[in-house]
Length: 158
Image (cartoon, rainbow, N blue to C red; front, top):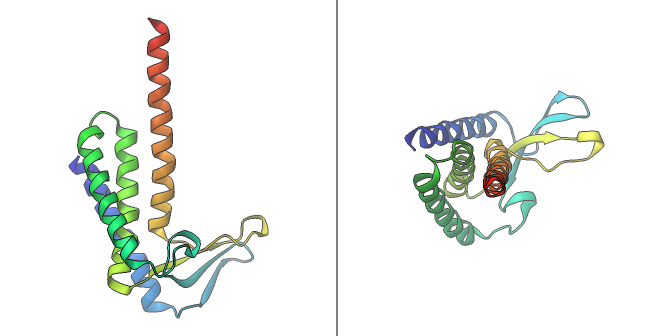
């Protein structure tokens, strides 16, 4: 369990460091071209959740994040030693939730900066915590699907 909490802490550190670099070195709205027409570092602030949903609902995010973090730590403690993929997913989800939570508590908004245009589509701007949340959900789905497959396979063999 401690390994996965350490991984989460490391990812929170990376998230906060990258956001600090953006805040210190870029003005809001400033964009730096990394790959023309495809990838930019764009200093942006978000007062809501993904894609700006629920903007200004600080109290809601505060309570939901506290509940989610407690739940994730509980599941890591109860199930993390049984399934390493599940434990990794919890680490990723924890780091993403905590990284954006710190922003909301310290700045009152979330710092976003990765801005991609895949195939010309203007994808919403995001940050390291959002990447962790996304891969955490994907990894958890894989873990759950794989676990169910094993259960079904075990049942069929009997």
